[in-house]
Figure 1: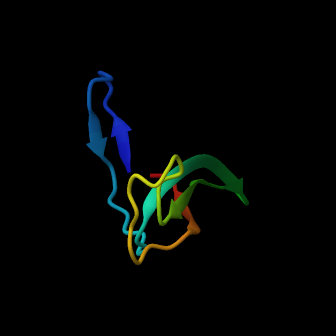
Figure 2: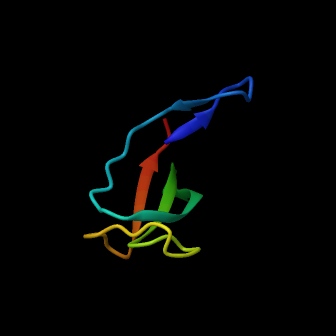
Figure 3: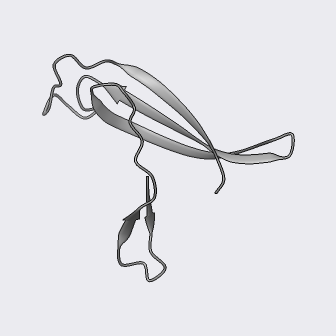
Length: 74
């Protein structure tokens, strides 16, 4: 995960997340989650064996799947 610095000129690494799945990331959706007084962030990642706009890159041994990560606020 990356964030934009306050001067809006660079990205800085916040956290490295190992998904454990081979493939091409075709989509990422970030949404806020609040339940029972806990706040967090839900990150949904769409992974495929090839890119969504064509077969420019194909990953052998890759999987078509959706991964949902839920993280608490820091």
